[in-house]
Image 1 (cartoon, helix red, strand yellow):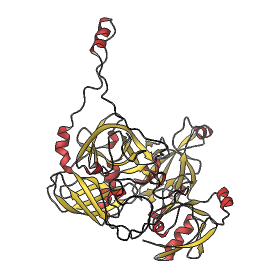
Image 2 (cartoon, one colour; image 1 turned 180 degrees about the vertical axis):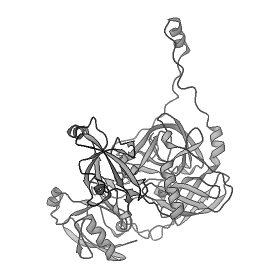
Image 3 (spheres, helix red, strand yellow; image 1 turned 120 degrees about the horizontal axis):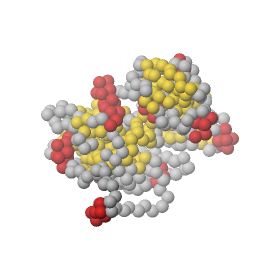
Image 4 (tube, one colour; image 1 turned 90 degrees about the vertical axis):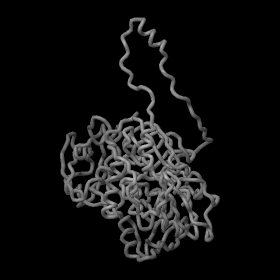
Length: 497
């Protein structure tokens, strides 16, 4: 737990050799002599400089820095940490396994292999947050407070407050906590839609526990979609953020919060020039729902989608690769009722252009269930406008729009499964149809491993994700899974939530 609490989430990495860190000095400025030479040669005058000097962040930090807080969390460790294996049989603490998980400070218990820890002390960690209302509402990352038994907020003036977790949303990694206080300093909320690559931004947070540290950089890109984060169009920056910056604000030069620092791409576990923030409009939508009802409601239309590459664009007569190709449509679902067909390419949603398939899930999920959405599709080499009534995404539904080959997630047990391929079935000699891709939570604690093949639940054979979901719901508090591991078949009892 301590590894998760200090850290941002770590985006997909692959460490194949030694890492080298380097720094470079400030960029050279244009030489006056060169300007003089151009003038005397009769060359036309240069246009006005696009960039003049470097920004001074002191006023911004002095005004809004007091609204940034340190979030300290405590959680009791499980009495026994279950040993798991990765997809290729790697041990759980192997770097190749851990680099795809959230990271943090070095494990004070030595990392290493899992094993009994009945006498282990409570796990502690910390992240960052920022105050959004003077009566004590604070935004941070869900992974900072997930599973915490105690949360303490520490302000700039070193006052400490116990905090209550109002709600958290794993899909966007946004959480809201509350402290009992009045007349607190607050941040201003900005508009991420106005961001452009090259604009200056700063982050304030607690990297490695150093509270209220300020770092600066620029917007590198917008609307980035990362693996397993199909609901967030991330803001990419080169601002230096590290473990402990999780949940801290990303400010623009007007002193407005335009994002929540959440993830980094790293081969070392530390900053390497790629940082990602949750746009504040996405986070605010989640915050408002959590404060109002304690949960987040999302829209779905019931389709699977995939990328449109150059070959597919040519075959469908599209001018260039763009949009989202619909692979399948749920029978009787919202898209089916609205006239959408397999083979359609979504090119606009409510008037917004779709460049990549990954943009569709976040757009659809942000639509309030029950509302209608206008979807333009490319069909038979022409545009067709359709109206689809959005329904609510249930947690057990998994992703409302995703490629058919993606694993399905079973929230209650922490299982991520997918249909087994014919070649795999022949290789392992099994009659099973579902293979475990990833495992967390109760299933991990029970000993289920990636690569296990699920045969039955409580004696009921399961061949589809729907079968598995239905059987788990009927099984009660303890779910007996019959799994095949290698050539052996074993029952694994999993305690549900």
